[in-house]
Image (tube, rainbow, N blue to C red; front, side, top):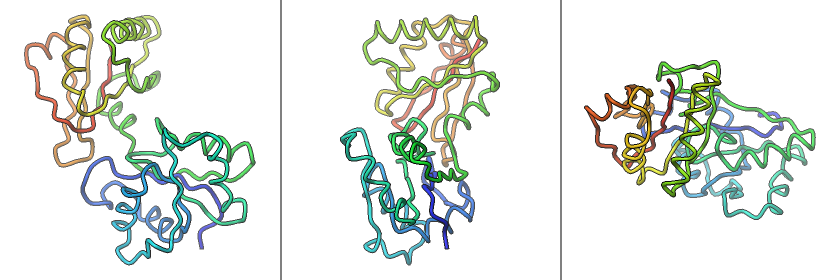
Length: 235
């Protein structure tokens, strides 16, 4: 029997065996939950079926929490937990509540004094940082950079300052279909000696994590496919 709590359940970053990236205890928790708050119902159902092919998906309840969810509807998603029933939170990829709308639900649960239980699983932010060779003691995650070129260049200048003056690794992401244009922009505006790590398909079959200076990237460019990627900068 799973204790009543808000369980933050990581999901894989790429296709492949769940056992490779998720502990067996996570799967045991999933099998005992009946209420889920998810970013996308369709992909959540697919993930849960992969966790247990015998799971009766139609017996589960789903509440969708994403960028389109009205703020006034979030608190009600905790009602099963307030009745003493466990609730699971699923992101689209990686860890819920990290660069994810699930953080809003967790904040309400904390204010209400409800138990929040984060489970172990893959985070592209931490895995990318671990493999980059950059400062893992002092770092910042900026999420998505501005799309407009001048605003993006201004943000990158701010990152350069923080790297130089605060010795702080800078981490950011991009929508997969804009990966290539972002890399082109980075190579055009960053100093040649700056180090850039590009990590794609982390934990997947085609995982690639490369750290080079901007000058080295220009001399040896790569084609960035439309796959999940994370970018890190350091001096």
